[in-house]
Image (tube, rainbow, N blue to C red; front, side):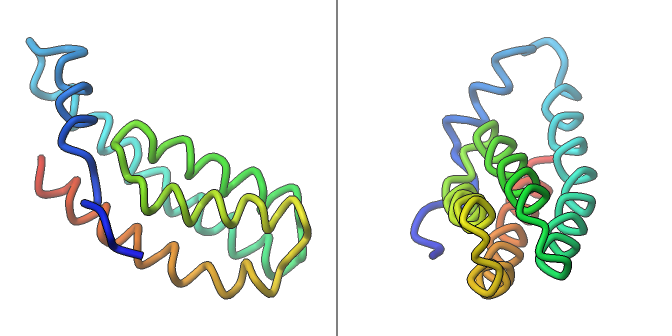
Length: 116
């Protein structure tokens, strides 16, 4: 997928503008996102293993929403695909999408860590 930047410079600038007097603000948002992701990945793994459509849909939706804050469009696109896979119970497809989600997250993780 990797056709666009891992995160959007515009989205990052927008986040910074929310609290320009506090340079730690952006760092805190990034830290919250990065700290939450292992739990979301664990939820996805559990959902795929146990064929839990609701959990798969919810975890993918949460990831998709969080990506919007940082303009991580490629990661959000994979999460959206997995959300639809959860809604349709397409667990084999979700299992195949999961490595791509992790690879896109690695790009986003590196880009966000470079900002802090």
